[in-house]
Image (cartoon, rainbow over all chains, first blue to last red):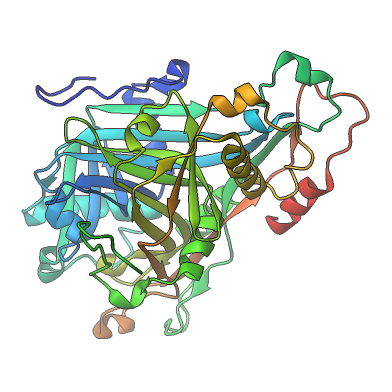
Length: 219
Length: 219
């Protein structure tokens, strides 16, 4: 992917075959992770990294936060680095040294811009809501003008990004395969529990179909 | 917690009652998260954030990586910011604006040092291994001298840290409670699947008790 002039090219150096620069892989990982971590250099030159919600629309990344958040006051029109990671399993090798985790991770670089117009913010909020749980946007009350005003959303192109993925089992030293030590992987996944209806739920409201569907996909 | 001279104090500004500066809370969140995200300012002044494994020993944080990793060449003896986050549920409010997630998050600041001595590295690897899956250290082959040499571990005191936690249900605008819109939370948790024994497992090796125990705790 392209690198704007003046920005250092960031590539994954360590294990090149775990890196993937294609938008599809990067996008799939962004879609699969609920939060990302956004790093900026603050006014005094110190690194700051904070978690935030993200969403994606094609090759555009949205970063969500309140207008009051220090990160968002700092990050707009500044270089940021964004990383999102999901852990898919533990890898137990015969040797301590080769213990690892299976994971999918993406790192993006860019200079986000604050979305200022109402329509742009509404589109971003739709992306956030539908990413959280598909189907919700049509059901929930849409944002009012003053709510859009109070919402800070950053937008940046996904044009400098790397993905790293580790899958599979343990890789041990040749001589260690003879050791009587159990080795293998323990898959990890996120599951959804029984929904907890709001205390002040109106009587007679059924759980929406998209909630049931979300749970089925994460059971 | 203390702030070294010259380092800007980073506090959670936005929702002060979600912030907790105590080591116990910070430590519990670090222990509950498999990976953290480490941010540094690179040689050209750009932010870089990468995921890495971490472990904790009391008020000491260990950060793990290969000697070949650019991050670790950069991060030693430099200011870093570390964040670890776990998402505990989706919060579906009646209004789009008040949708949220329940989460536990920690942000730490510090200047890590590389551990150079074998004993220190061994202790750190013990912490990583036992954090990954308690009981494993006694079972796996211990690191050899050349493996310790190839292991880069950073160590930093947990003395400037903030925790943020969101729990509970949706908080809607007063007038929205009358809307016929389902609201509630969907809990999320990480579960462990059926272990996948290594292809080259020796015959007759039973799955260790700590693997079964790990799965029971995450079923």
